[in-house]
Amino acid sequence: MECTVTWTGHSGTRSHMGFVAETGSGHVLVMDGAPDAAKPENGGANLAPRPMETVLAGTGGCTAYDVVLILKRGRHDVRGCSVKLSSERADTDPKVFTKIHMHFTVTGHGIPAAAVERAIAISHDKYCSASIMLAKTAEITTSFELVEG
Picture 1 (cartoon, rainbow, N blue to C red):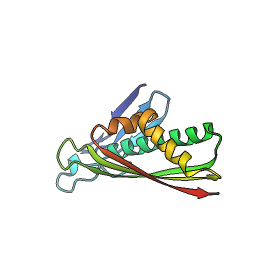
Picture 2 (picture 1 turned 135 degrees about the horizontal axis):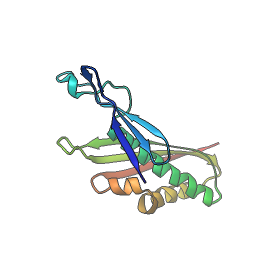
Picture 3 (picture 1 turned 30 degrees about the vertical axis):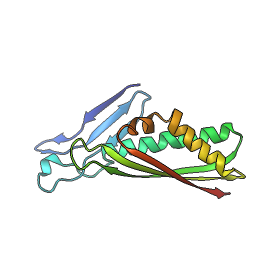
């Protein structure tokens, strides 16, 4: 897996903290920093997600992918899946994630709650590389709701 991240932030006399990531699979992801009122030259322009937001989003995508795939392989009629992630970070550098909660909403027809619970557990114990890595610094908790539909 490869990725090239390039700073886009210097134009003329003004600089900002924008970056473009070009992935090995041929896709582009834009990132930016938060504005810094005290030192505008060190801040971003708030034009894209923060790098750590993309880490959190990638983790959500990784685990949701697993949950859907596990349910489909179990021949369950899954029709939707979303995961809302909320996190806390350390107050001092490096500001690693210290707590992450993932709340899954799974929509489908006749899916047993035990199957959803099992799919989430398998993702976090075996398949989701991102959440397994983040679990080295963060306490990860999960919850879910099952919507018939």
